Amino acid sequence: MSTPLQPVITKAGLSAIFTADNTGVSARIGSIVLGTSGYRPDSDQKSLVSQVAEYPITGGERLSSNLLHIVALADGPKAFWVREIGFKLTDGTLLAVWSHPTEALTYKAANSDVLLAYDLSLDALPADSVTIISNEASLSLSLSGPLAAQANALLGEQLRGLRQQDRLESQEQQQLIISDKVNALKERQILNEQRQDSGRDGLLTAIAANAAAVIALQLHVTKLTYGA
Image (cartoon, rainbow, N blue to C red; front, side, top):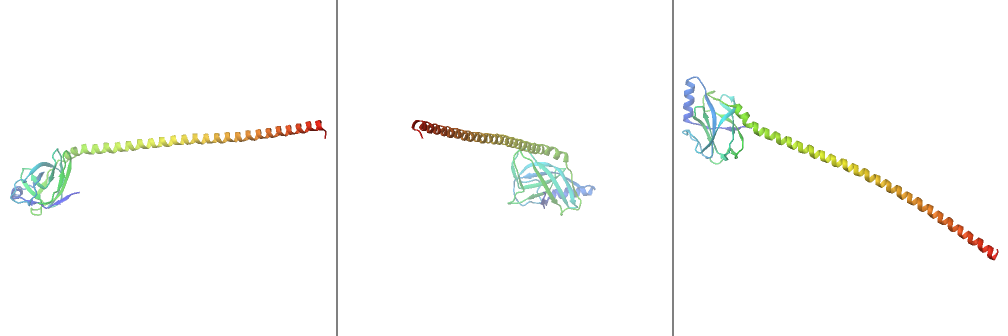
């Protein structure tokens, strides 16, 4: 996503463009400078008020005769709020400045890469009088490290997910095995109870038969003794 900017064209930048135009060439923007001061820019400026860093243009395109899309990569160990930004020509001339007394463009964290993308409006200049010189290979190399780190992090997360899924499937399999064993034990318990019930029934039948035999014997003895 690009941030639209309407910068102030400096007198030095205008003079450089006039000189280039007279020689039949376009002035070329080669770098972006960032600073920390917030103010209302002045056309007499030849530098930022509190410049902190300068980064080469890494990409861009002409959107119209007076609108340029510019990309740069802010890297390095410095940390600061970006409250002023300048666009420098390849000869070192400060072409344009943007700043605001109370607003910041972005924050550059320490040891981090911030992709800067701006749509630069140059309505105050002749059409097609400014172009861009960029080093897209530098951008690709600068982003290769973070992209590789993100890819490794994503692969690591996917691997952890697969391992967790394997653990869950293993636990589920173990639970099925335990459940089968519990069901088998229940079936054995039911069979044992059935056998015990059958044994108790047989024992009661035998006891009843023995009791009947004893009673019959007693009656027979009584008859023999007393006669009946």
